[in-house]
Length: 356
Image 1: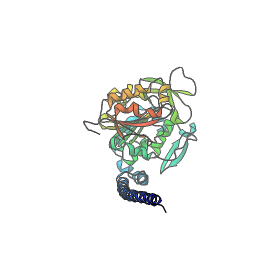
Image 2: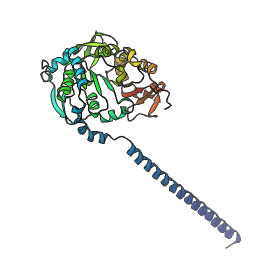
Image 3: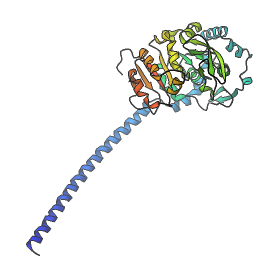
Image 4: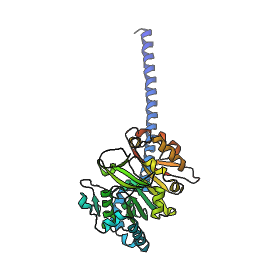
């Protein structure tokens, strides 16, 4: 073998040895990274386990619901009877249901059961479960006092909150006569009189009579202009400020307001300056841009109105991106993902000097 060929072979061996050394070094580095990554994974797993232990559980809430039902009798008292009597004197629709003059079954409503409750719903429309997740999402800011449920439907949101003790009393506004009758029966048959106070009323930006379009599921019934056509019923209408005054609600005791009025949300706020001025009250508002527009309102008008009264919000959609608690000035940007036909619920509150 010539000297040149030997030298080339030696050079090739040196290169392969260098490559082998580099590969060995890389493997050692990768092994070190893998060990570090495994350590980080163990830390994250411990954090996840800790978070799960520290986080409220929907399953646990469901398991304890039946136990809370048994405490209702102990929570009834003279004050509840007084509230009930005032409601009977003021609300003819409620008195009609109590006295048996209006039977929900005559209107096609059906009686069933739901997690230990007697549950009346409009014919063929059933609730399969109670909204435990939604209840848990609002506990941090909305529990401990009186609730106002605007667009209460058959009481799916208000009734379990009262039973669980998240709110001490719930005033419910539901405009549709048959849906209201179901709500009233759910209150009466579950022994919640005085704790849940139903009123057949629409809440909007004026006092008088409103036109309610009944189309599809009762959760989709909404107020419409005077020239709208379809399956329409006229219902009494009040601003929130007027309704609160007429009902005798002590706003100092109110901690939580839920608004689900199918596109009339901005109009509710427009008639609620007195209530909105009470900055200790948290609000849960459904936002569906397409329905706001169908009611003649720009979603941006709702966002602007909200910014006048609140400092922070939480998007309750579990798929929402970004920080959980955000300044209300970011609301429009944060909700861009629901355009044009999506919807979500936002929890609005004012933080007194707190940095969140």
